[in-house]
Length: 139
Image 1 (cartoon, rainbow, N blue to C red):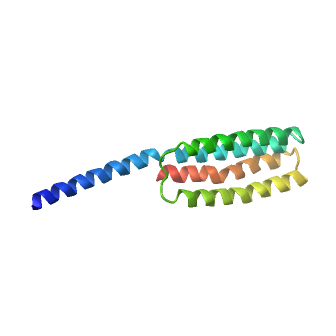
Image 2 (image 1 turned 30 degrees about the horizontal axis):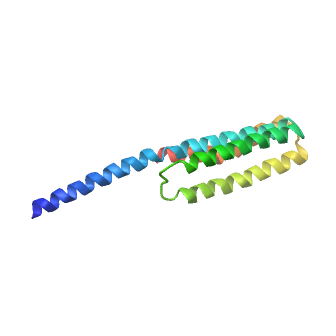
Image 3 (image 1 turned 120 degrees about the vertical axis):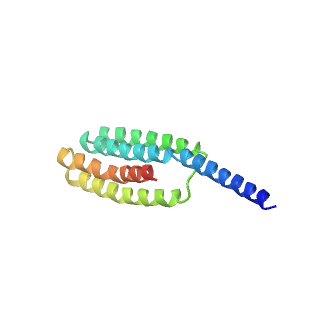
């Protein structure tokens, strides 16, 4: 009887390890999501700030919309989401939104076409995505 219970426990542990490994491999897409988000944000900010109106805004917004649609389709196709992903994504989006708003509003009001504002601004706006990608890769 004890032998049967130990075999059952060993089988359960093997199954748990297999499922854990499968989930870990299945959640690698988070890193790519965050990287693409951060880089696309930086590119969009550069286009918007450096090309001037209306072309910079049109090109930047078009690229941004295409990126968001692509990322949304990519996320919808993923089968596994690690516990807490929604919360971490919400924190990343909120911090990105604050930085993005500050860079765009101030830049469009006072620094239009000034690379000294837009290049560092693009890097700052990309930081939430890039930091999230780094933290997710370490998990």
